[in-house]
Length: 110
Image (cartoon, rainbow, N blue to C red; front, side, top):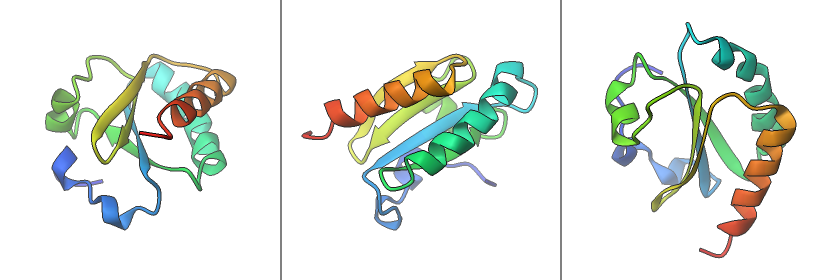
């Protein structure tokens, strides 16, 4: 992903899904490296429900600041109206699946 992006720059019409999961990480973050395969698995598992976008905080400082990302890894779940939920820190695949399932169900009617 090259160039700065921002929330307005996310074109919701190019995504079939209503939800976007932004995965903020860095190349030097140990928990981020642990989360990488988990994020790949989750992206595949939730492919029909959300779009996952990995964002390097060192390259996308404006977006990180716009979404108040203060640590990595941070996951921010968005819909076209804005941020709905966030998860900060490394988690297991089970914890992440549970969190995402809960968030998608909770926000399904909004």
